[in-house]
Length: 86
Length: 175
Image (tube, rainbow over all chains, first blue to last red):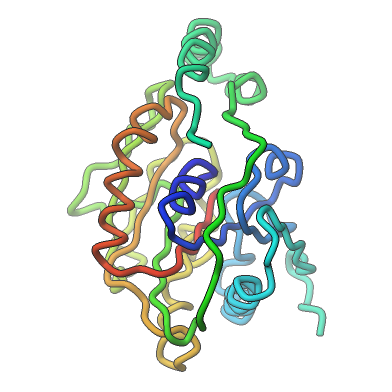
């Protein structure tokens, strides 16, 4: 995904990605990314948790506006099967 | 800075030669650690302007999703992976999707593909005018080790389709 994101940004398309491994993300250097504490194969949280999936997308939309420095990674606070913080 | 494939190619060939026996034996975890991941110092950047409520969004997942009755699955046997992509329409239903990706647990996405491809959430946000438009077509990749044709052929093809569809923003979900 890192290369696809990189090439898209180079081609003038704005992107935001997700990731769950800080070490790997530090190497790949995505232009904009959200870092979640979820396992592989479920970046948006638990299956069927519509509210949480929606919230993560809204976080991404807010991040598009707020991230002004290339390579910004924002850590999201959500934890598996625990309620969202306010 | 362009992606340095000339540096990648010999390192990758060496990795394949050294890794193939372990790969065929199913010992994948150790191989990934030795993979010649392309790293770079600079970060490409297209500045964000405008408002989501006036823009067009498309999704890209690398979860190996494909339309099981209409498209071939990705190659999950080759050590090189599969650099091709599948087009997924915004109207896709859970029962139309298959997953061809050998390196993660599919059980969560099989229950709800939105955990790796949140198209239904995006469509809800489109209805509420929080996002302007969700593109008709979205894109799925699987895992790719030999990135040469990914970089030289597949991603350029993807980008020309994205531009033709007037997509402003890509939301990208790996697995």
